[in-house]
Image 1 (cartoon, rainbow, N blue to C red):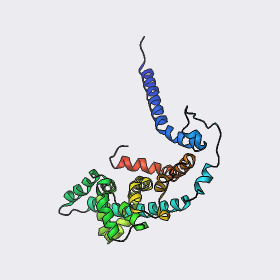
Image 2 (image 1 turned 45 degrees about the horizontal axis):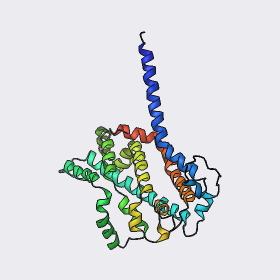
Image 3 (image 1 turned 90 degrees about the vertical axis):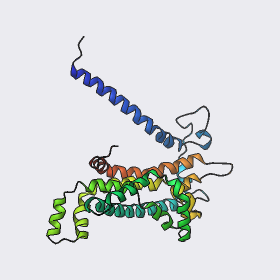
Image 4 (image 1 turned 135 degrees about the horizontal axis):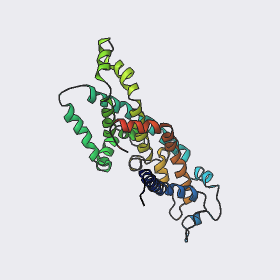
Length: 281
């Protein structure tokens, strides 16, 4: 029996769809489990045998989580929003200007300096935590918003992302603007930035989710409860003899919503920005 080329393509497409669906479900299952478990009673979360659906639905865990004694999660969310917004804005400014400079200005040591900056990607954040903490402490920024924002406001990956995208801007447009008498700052603001908005949105999404989920740095630099961020609050949301798992999971579900909404609004720019910079998801 001879199978036509069209039938082969349909079979291959079906297999591919099955693999992708299975992989997608494998990735999303922990989030579904987290959401379902947030409606369980504390004794049912770790019960054996495991029950996927709650034997008794608990709809008070979300209210209890935000009114739990000793934990001010509304303040933690406010702290995280402040840190993410200002750290992301500062990152966009620094990475965009640096990327534009590396892409459009030819100066001695351009490539060497860029390689040096890019090489810092290979250094794990944990390796520089101690000297970074000493620096922040000596600057008097411990337990402050600036102590959280400044170390999270520059990323070598962001410089690389913007530099790669800036290369796609035709030099003829920039030269024409210079001939017309435009200043370098005006060229950057009125030409380079609008033409790079897809890469900028991709950088916003990348960096915002990284700052929002960062745990180790807030744990080190923040010691006062009122300055905690959401990941720090969730990590410390337990007692000596008792851990309120449904409330902990409820806060985790709420903590996923801002980044999920950000991705929904910026997803088309994210995919386009990554493809145009030559990266692969």
